[in-house]
Length: 81
Image (cartoon, rainbow, N blue to C red):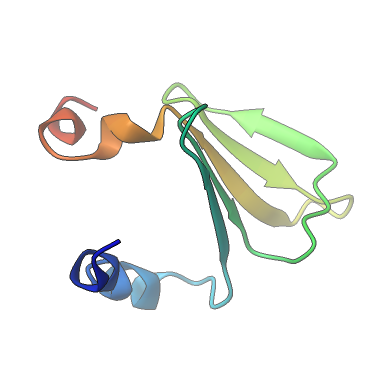
């Protein structure tokens, strides 16, 4: 992967209140897993209308996001979301 493309996310990461993140992308399923704690220990999940799951631990703290259909957020397709 081109390092220049990866570096484009830096401004977004710096704006986030989450300072530690682990990313895993399943290309075959087109699902992006973003964890704010490692190892992830989600016990509850909440899905919004965009197909984004918010994952929570037993104390109700957000532990990560699961983005289903990730490719729709890329390029021209992102304008439609």
